Length: 511
Image 1 (tube, rainbow, N blue to C red):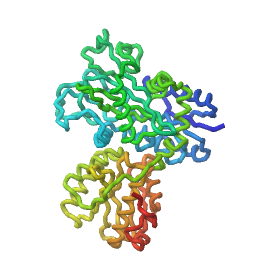
Image 2: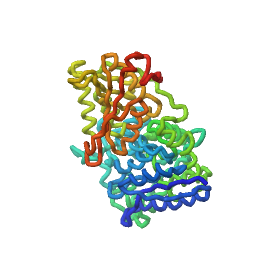
Image 3: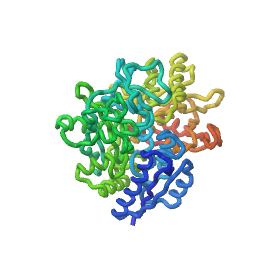
Image 4: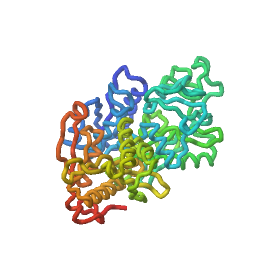
C-alpha cells in the first residue's frame, strides 16, 4: 500500500472560517485517499518546518498531499505560506499542486498581472495604463476576499495607496471561476461556474452601497446577509463565451506555470470581454468548494477527483516533474542573447525580477540601478549583461556579472533571473554557460554566486549545484538570525579551454 503524508498548517481554534476550511478539506481528502487505497498520515505544521523536512528525508512517503497555504502567526499567504513548497522541493518528495515558483508568482497579484499581460492575456487596466476609474482597491497578496468591502470600489484614487495594496479597473460585467485539472494527456478545463448575484443587491441587512463583490463575511459566514445573496451556476453560459474562457484559462495556466490543479477567476468588461482577475494555484479542495463542484459538473466525483490529483503529482504532469524542470515537452524558448543595454532595459529587468516573486522592492531597485550604472559607465562600471529575449522583444531572462575589484581573475554572478513561464526548460543554464564562457574569455578563472540559506531559496541552490557550482562557504546568520549567506563557485579553467562553443563543465548549451 502506498503511503501519503497529508500536510497542512496547524489551525488555531480561534482562526477564521477560511482557515477552518483547511480542517474540513484535510479530513475529506484523507477519507478519499484511503478509499482509493492509500495509507494516509496527517501532519499539521507550524513555523518551524525542520522536523517535517527531516522526517521526509529519513522516511519519504510516495506522495505528500500539500494543503499548506499559510503558517500560524503569519498573515496569509505571505512568504511563510510558500515555505512548505520550498521545503518539499528541497526534499525531492513528490507533492500535489504547483511548485514554489508558480505559488510565489500567483500569490503576488500585481506581478502575476504583468506576466499575464506580457503573455497576451487580458487583465484589468490600472492607473498606470491611464484607466480613469472606477477602481477596485485590493491587497497585493491576500486572498479569501480579505479587505474587500463597500469602500473597495472608488471613482478616484488617493494620492498614495497604503503599502501592500494596489488598484485596478473595476469591471461591471459577469463573474466566472474556471477550474483546471492536470491529466496524463494535458490540462483539462472543467465546466466554468458563474457567480450570480441577487437582482436586489445588496439584500436587506447587507452593507448599504455594497458593489457587486463579496467581502470576507459574505463569502465565508452563512449567517451574513450577503452569503445567501449569491449562488454558483453552470448554466446559461453561451458557447462562444465558454470557448473564450477555456482558451484564456489555458493561457493563464501556462503563463504562470501551474501544475496539478488551479483556478482562474474572470470578470467581463462593459463590452463583454473576459479579463483575468487572479489565478489561484491552490484553490480550496473541501467537498463543498467550487473546485469540487466544477469536477462534479464534469462527472468526476469527489473521491475520483482527489485520486486524480494524487496520481497527477507522481506522473509527468505533476509538481515533482515541474520542479525538476521536466515538464512534458519542455524546451528552451527561442531567444536571442543580447549584450548591449538599452535605456528601457532597467524597467524591463525590474519587471522581470518582480514577476519571479523572489525579490523585495528594495532588491528590485538594486537590479535596476545596476543597469543604469552600466549604461552610464559602460565596461568601466564592471557590470556585464546578457539579456535573453524572444523575437517580439519579451524579456525571458537575464544575467548580470563582472570582475571582482582587486582580485586576480575572480568574477561575481550578481544576478540571474528567469521568467516563471520559461523556468524548467534550461534557459537559466544557457545564461550561465554564456556568462561563464564570456568571463573565461576575458581571463576569469572562477565565477562566484551568492544566495540565502532559507528554505525559500532551495530551488536556487539546487539550480547552482546542477549548473556545476560547488558550495565553498557558509556565513551563518548573515542576512538575519537563522538565515545564512551561501557562497557558490564555478571554476572556469575547463570553460576557457573548451571555448564558448561548450557549456558549463563541457555540456553543450541547449537551445
